[in-house]
Image (cartoon, rainbow, N blue to C red; front, side, top):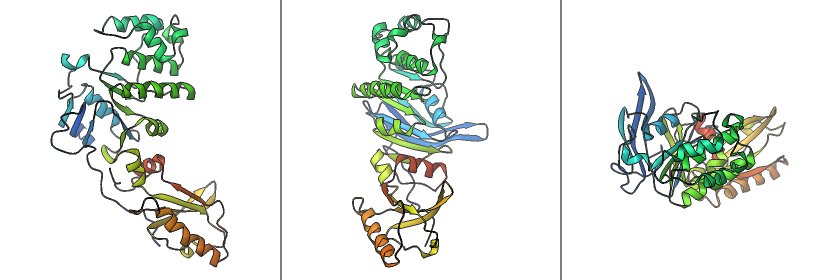
Length: 336
């Protein structure tokens, strides 16, 4: 019995074709970014439509922030093209300044100003801004209006960052780790705000280390590793392509080689709190019945050999499973 994972086809463009979708708010085609001899981004392609949230996930150093910084206009591509509403964003041309905004990883707030003064300063720089009260209400900072920014918690500063980003009513919004430092309640309130923006037609490109955030918000997603997109598609496409899981604690008197071969499945042993567990990954075209088709012969084998399968688990793959597989370098995965 093989313990190796199967190797499906490599990921393709999220929206393949030509120089990009002409109706897309964001279009990236074969983007490459190098720093000297180091290639940080290696041929990334995707589109984001108006009213869509696209989550760009990956390990630290995968190239996510470099990709977003290029789309924000801070970097010129080494090769390939990036477009926002059909315009090259490099240098942040006037045609795009009122149409796009961002929440960056590092805040640029002035600690000496109050929250209200910070919002008013940003409003003075915008053509058609939301009111101060609207921004305070959206971010849940109404009771902090007269507080100096330096006195805010890390999560509150991130909420203010987001409020300033939506203040000019952008059509494209880049969110780079927007909920870092927030408590669970504030994070969920922020998710609601982001979902409302998308429902209003804003195109959102999100990077996050909170996989639940991507699961809740993303219409489509891509997972990057070492500068490349390894898997892309809707959440269902990504997860279904990774298979179902059957797992149980390995009985003390059973060797790995004694385990049955299950249809469409590969097996491996993993350690959980110093206990050996068997984990079957089941793949196949019959996404509705593939786990049942593998579980039935496993139960029959256990009955014949009078073996109890302690703590038996049957579940679909999760986004975390896919992410960890990519992070572990487990070959290329299938895209939607």
